[in-house]
Length: 198
Length: 436
Ligand SMILES: [Zn+2]
Ligand SMILES: [Zn+2]
Image 1 (cartoon, each protein chain N blue to C red):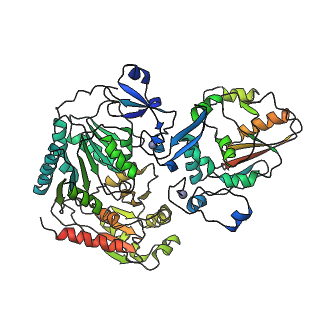
Image 2 (spheres, chains in turn green, yellow):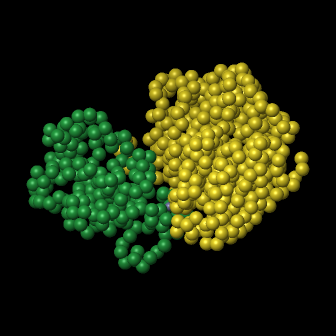
Image 3 (tube, each protein chain N blue to C red):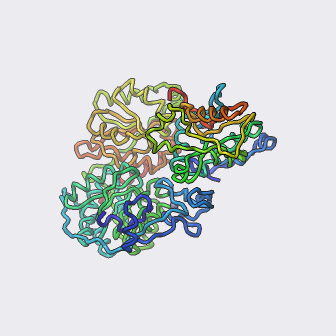
């Protein structure tokens, strides 16, 4: 098949690992695969990759050119990292208007491609793009996210999943929200972590 | 917006007041993807059509991955196609003519004759034969016949060089350059200079289609772009292919379909093409990767520095460009690197032309279209597979284009001598031997 990123034809080699661990067939070539750089996880956040040039280009194409097929690129890595987690998986949602602009939610599509079950329990209340007041609102304590009424997170262990971690404001807002609703433990998982000097 | 939409095929969402055009019946709406085919680029290869659950149409939606660079087209995209009256055309065009050599004039006349007969044409001209000047009179002829003309080329760099030259040559004509990210003036243009990708935004728009660098990547390799050329022109519009290195297939088609044919084996100033020389360097690639500048390359750079000559240093990969740039800068400080993804490419080439930079370390992106007076050229790792014979001929063609600097140095630094290098040198010698 042809690589989803560089369009060169390649053969997905079958390794002995593939036979033991359940994996999905590769959708990108070895060269493109090597262009991504694994990230160091820290105590507060588990991250799979750094935000290097290859990742910048990937994000640009996936989110901004809306090439949804690219949700499949990291499905093996996501599956390996998430399928044994005991916590309930909570994807970071888009605001309704942003969802209509993008036509898909990048985090949900990543999880779906990796066949990771998740619970859609959050709602984004404020469209950051349109609201000039966001910063003030954040300071005034109003959370940009809310928990949908039908979900009770009391004593639950939860894992928030987002695509990119930059300053951590988004995921930490959600973490506070879930803890204040009685969650026992809330952890954070992201596909990409931007180093503080990038 | 007067006449801007004529011949165009455009995503409804990028056009202001789309509904007024629809209501007035000047455009028809078509669905972006229909029956498994992208209606913009005509791709119907299922590997490049991806279906997912779309939040807008709240159901399965298919988008095209072939032409996604021009903005995504999906099942729920509406494309607007012009069906209104033709924009009034004028024949008030003039040409500020620079003198042509006898050979250029003959080719120019032959091309006019082909356009008159609505027959396709192959203009086979060596690098530096002055092919742009050859096109001027035929373009003027077409414009005065109130025909709409498009000059398409695979590369943005070529559009950037060609468009201002054409605008100067045709002062009364609106010449519109189109490339990814270009600011687009919304009015009717009788003469368009576009990258082949941009042609996908047109349908049955042009009465004369000139395809420059017809041999160049990606045109030869990508069927989609050939379809783009055919889709953008009217059914009976002649196509003129311009190239220094026509493929066997193009030559065969030209003969079989009885196209017009012009051959210019000489440069416009009559001097022969510089023949590349080969300089072998033991373990060249490994040395560069270890950040060592081989002596032969050092000597070559030193000579450029002494003679104050501008130069281009071609390398096969971005990784090598990154290794080599600091090494070159140690010898000559005012040197920069350019490659395909470089956003400042335009500025850097301009700086080289104006002498603020003495040299550029570059990928094959600059192999075509760039003309720098008295430029000297080295291809480093010329035995890399990316340098096929066509690319090496084009690269060599950068040298000696100016009548006052009709010779110059072209050197291939390599570990081995490839068939491509042999072929390129043989072809250049052959062209030099042809008498006109
Ligand atoms: Zn690839
Ligand atoms: Zn398409």
